[in-house]
Length: 299
Image 1 (tube, rainbow, N blue to C red):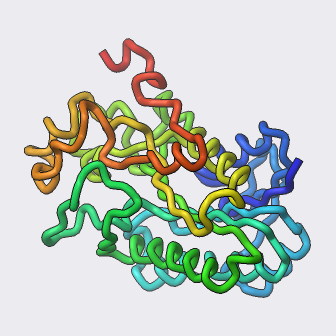
Image 2 (cartoon, rainbow, N blue to C red; image 1 turned 180 degrees about the vertical axis):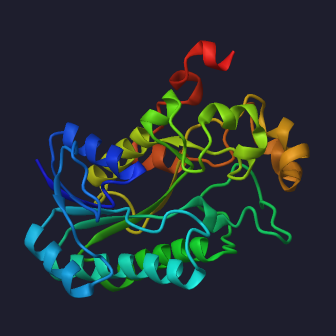
């Protein structure tokens, strides 16, 4: 049994990550400003923007590894300076506190938005499906903060790679378990709304992932963090698009910037490739919208 600390453990994604780790038999500490009454993990309240408090907490808990999810999670959810400063400060504090405490592994949450889709001027993919080698082109403060987190990971490898294993992952549009049953998603509409109106899913290039699958990715990374190339970045998504039609069929109307490269997608395949996670970690998402929604709901 290992001891893991999950920041943002009360969030839409954090809840599932915590549950997967606990169910696998690990001792989990959830750090969040908002406790959950039904969480299976030990809860700690800490302002991770406070360097001294973060350092003291991690020194006290002394986890074997940390999963850093805490952030302002919605683009344009706060003023740009606040969003960028908060997200980068939390990640920097967690890394420096981890190094001080001798934590062996830290996994940071990034975002597919670092690729640059949705930019108001001129973005188009270099190829499809998009993988981790695709050029980055963040165009807003949220995406830039996530690119900075990935740069922090690279810096940690160069400066401290003999002491700590670090990585980053880009979870696609997260769907929590209750959202398959009709609870509102992060944007306020339902999964069925997203399927009925492709414009809603087109905003994120029709990508998605079940939060429990992300938890299983995290568990796979924690188990193999010291066996894979240090600093590896991963896309984490379902293998198909969140749409009744293929992306190639929808591109002309909803995402014309994909047209030139859409021939690279087969059938209902996702715009983002998680092949690296499958190859290095043996992980592949097992839940799709077709398996998670009742048949009568998608007919």
